[in-house]
Length: 247
Figure (cartoon, rainbow, N blue to C red):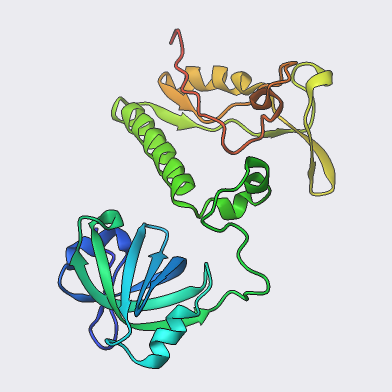
């Protein structure tokens, strides 16, 4: 699916992921500055838009002095709308570069309060403290895409074979197993707990649907491993269960 649109001046607005479809054309990309490098009278800003990254090229003699200085003064993660001509370059990330001809700065990050995760190396503790921002980095975004693709492949596998996805309740008002392993949650000013016994619902589902799959389930074993003591993590894997009997 092509997500390009047209502006009033008929310049295609596209995503970086689909920019290869516009080789040789002038397009507009909406995103953020990921990094900026300067070499003499050339600027090499790298832009990201959530679908990928692309390097821009800004030649001082090809744009107005105001535009050149505006791009030169951009700070990391500043919001921009960039217009330029797309050309293929095997050396570039993604295989394409953009010769920037115009740019609109929507929001410039204050240099006195800069974006904390610069392109340099950072320790894991620092990155985990800024997890919500770390996700913007190419590697973390790639991990999420790989994870989504794996889950989609699993879903497609079971969907194509007539399985039905079911989602047992996540919260419960009381213990299903042992009271010493409950994980309490504040729920609208009342105490609730992460359920431990999705299998109670699965037994009913097996008799109703015969072929089913189930989303992420939680257990509460006495274990010091991070995966075991953090059952509410949104990063937990899905378990795909099938009944051993349909009678």
